[in-house]
Image 1 (spheres, helix red, strand yellow):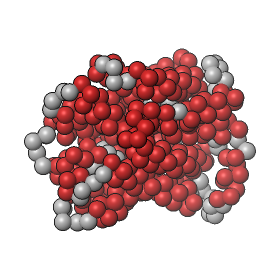
Image 2 (tube, one colour):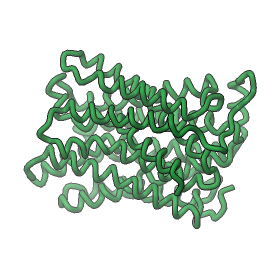
Image 3 (cartoon, helix red, strand yellow):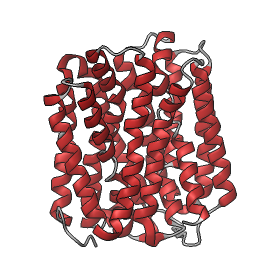
Image 4 (tube, helix red, strand yellow):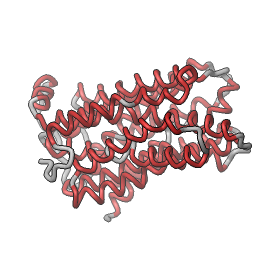
Length: 395
């Protein structure tokens, strides 16, 4: 693997560590601002909403395909890191915290999907593999605040926030110094016609099928990640295990972070079995675990842990393959717009399930996870109609 790819994926991990920086220290900040379980959903959804605003901005303006992705990623790293740091002052209101997290989401829209275009510009032929690495680093970045908290359990929560911001600054500087790949294609048209671009994408049946599969995956993914600490806490309490805060942080990192391995493995397997097959199998396994978890959960702590680890493994492994398929089947001058549009809609969908799961988990018990089932089921059905469940050729 060449050095630019390595630097991009490491920078991606550092940059996306902002995503769950507040979730990793929830136990501490909930006392400061008297937060409830639904406020956890609001914290996460503020980032999701900001991400949607950011991706819509890049889509509507055409900036995703007009400007160098390295410059966009750098600027957004600096914006996100600065906004993330502002919440360390306990005197500010919770409304300000929500606003700050929203800006972080806007910045992440320029770090993650634009980062996909950046990494493709270095080696388009290896997109399934390199996108697997990039999304895997997104997973590690998202889980990193939990590890930081577990290792520094005796430190003030501000250190976790400041450290994630510092990592994001490093990511921005790294991408700026590295620049763009030799295969970068920009949209050189003087006027960006949004309706024309959308029309071109909507006529592409393979892109639509890949996008719908991705939407079903997104119905489940971020709500699951948000609820991982909740599910661990329920299981630990049922087993009457001490030192809850340390275990919740460490196991949250482990369960979410396992997605890194699945993304990398999925990228490797895609070379032999192709992206559509990997995506279909991943989605099928994820929905199966979601289906059985409420039925056998809380019987044994070790069983809960195994199921959650398997769920964390399969819940994300389809994501880079959906992106790789979308990037390969759409017009190459619209790759940035196609990916940001897909991300924007997908993250809009995720806000619904984050709200529903964090609002109803107390009243529904473990059965609240069945709220996540419709997404992967429908996504698998619509995706398979175009690509086939085990079809050997994607495009």
